[in-house]
Image (tube, rainbow, N blue to C red; front, side, top):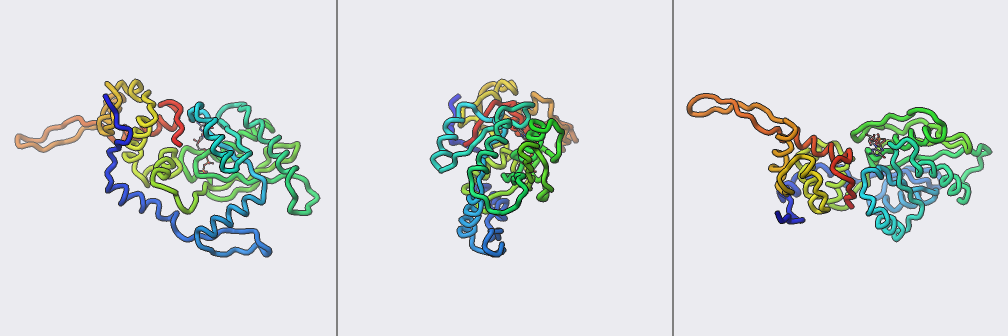
Length: 306
Ligand SMILES: Nc1nc2c(ncn2[C@@H]2O[C@H](COP(=O)(O)OP(=O)(O)OP(=O)(O)O)[C@@H](O)[C@H]2O)c(=O)[nH]1
């Protein structure tokens, strides 16, 4: 069967009507804390705020950690690194925080120490312990990273709550020690989003990765975008996984196949001219839920959406 890589049965109307309303809150005017001469809080418009926020981030050394490497397509690693390098980002590490002793998690403390020691100091405290803030979009694995660092460097258990949906960490937490020499503390923070998502496509990718609560976008819509992405990237393992006859860009067809394969059916009463009958229908919602979870757990192969 020939697939149209651009085919996506999500209705244009939906794009126009639903997404802008789900994402509206990011578009609102926002405030940012900028360390100025008096540590003053002030309001600016979006572009100014974004610039000021970026500047305030740039003052401090920072390390970009791209987590969930186990779910990403390994062949895209070099391309991603090159793109980041071109946009001026040098200190980048890929990690898999679920792995017991990830080699790259081990590299974090030496890298951070080197970065801090080679940067100017902005305070005169005698105490030389390092305090770092972990920031990132929701559900990316910030708490898991802190726990992995503790496990690797202190051989200690979980200190920060981890969960499969966005919004698990709800407030800036107290600092957590992750290393003794040097004394290194991390501060876990709730997931943050930029005030503006650059495009609907980016919004859908974020939703597919679980950074937005599924019901805000709709599991049927996310499942449709997932199917579109798998076909676009020619990742057809879903066909074997669910014993489908062939790849398809029809989400209803695919969800029906998944429901049948997994036995996710429901009995529905139908009223006919000759009395009520009970028919068995595929449970499309359950199938969509399963399809999305399978993708997020890497069961449909390793995929890089960007
Ligand atoms: N496959 C995989 N899953 C991961 C990895 N790191 C974290 N996770 C999973 O991702 C989910 C979110 O992890 P958290 O550590 O709670 O993410 P967070 O960024 O702190 O989330 P918020 O508090 O909601 O902002 C959990 O189900 C973790 O088990 C990873 O490297 N690989």
